[in-house]
Length: 294
Ligand SMILES: [Zn+2]
Image (tube, rainbow, N blue to C red):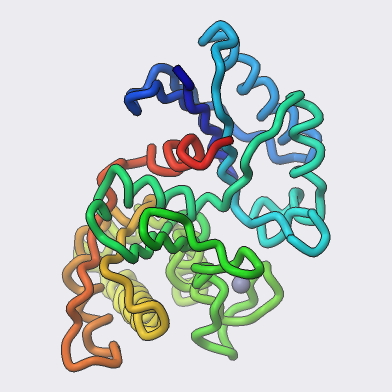
C-alpha cells in the first residue's frame, strides 16, 4: 500500500500531509516557514519530511512539494517565487540530495487547482481554473484531471499579467500586475496609498461592511480589478469553472459583486462561467502536493 506525502511550502507556513491509499489523511502538521535564507527553507522542509517518514515508520510513499514559482526548464533553477530567496536556487537538485530520494516539485496554485478538481469544488469539470487570492495571486489550470503546466511552466500565472501599465511596481519588475491589485497585500497597499494609513485586509473589509467611505472606495476598486482580471482570463481559457482559494476567497461579496464585475467585462453575451469557493479549505494546496508526488 503506497502512501502519498505532500508538503506545501508557503511564504509564512509549511504544511505536511500524508494520505493513505484511500485518500484519507493519516498525518498533518503545520510549521512556520523560516524564509530568512535558502538554507533555512531547505532545513525546514527536511525536518518536516523526516518527522513524516518516522510517523509512518518508513512505509513506502510518494513525495510531492508545492511551492510558489516553478523550476525553469532552461536552467533547472527556481523562478517566479514570491519567497524571493528561493529564486535562482537549485532546489530541484539540492532537495532530492538532502532527502535521499526523488520528489515532484509543482507550483502551489497548480496543486490547489488539481486538488479542487479531483476532490473539491471543481469535481466533474473538464477545464478548471484555480485561483489563489492570498498574500500573492496565483493561478493553475487543470485539463482532464491533469495539471496543464505549459511550455515554460507558467500556465495560469495570471497574477503577473498587467492590467494597468502605469500601476504600482510589482516584485516581478513589471507595473500594475493583477497581483498588485487583488492579492491581500495588494488590497492593503492600495488602501494605504488612498488613505495614508495601514490596515490589514481583514480590517479594510470590516470597515467597508461598517460603511466607511474610504474602505468602500478601495473595495469598489478591488472588485472592478478582480472583474477585469477574470474577464481577461476567461477570454483566453474559457474554463468550465473557476474555483477561488486563499484567504480573500472567503469574502462572500466576491461571488455577487465580484462576479457582476466579471459579467460586465466578459467578451460574451452573458457570463456562464461558474465562479465558486473552494471546498477543501486551507488543505487544497498540500493535498495537491500529495497528489502530484512521485
Ligand atoms: Zn508582477
